[in-house]
Image (cartoon, rainbow, N blue to C red):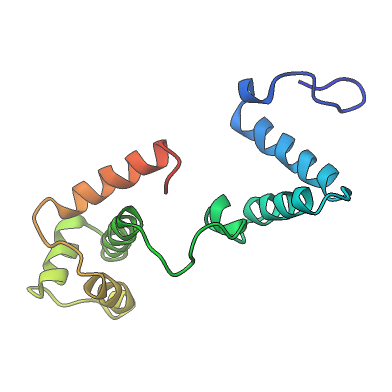
Length: 144
């Protein structure tokens, strides 16, 4: 909630997501004028993250090693690769057959198949269903 001058008058933690992002954008804009180097670093990192130039706020601030991938990050990549293959070929069962090598892969999905194989994605009967559930869970927690 804002006053007539556009200043936030409500506690940002109680706002919805769109209002929180807007409040963060306003804070980034105001912080860029600061003469405090640490604040400008923080504001620049938040601005890069808001612009989508960094996958996480930690990466935007340079607080995480860009070459390091967590186990969860690998699991997210595998799940996304499985789901992309399933979408490209039209159904989960066909994607698993293609991944196992028991069905031909359409030319338009070969790059997705190669990515899934490079990541050593699971090939079990429930692999794509589990990947879908995992991504949904991650999104609800803000991780994916």
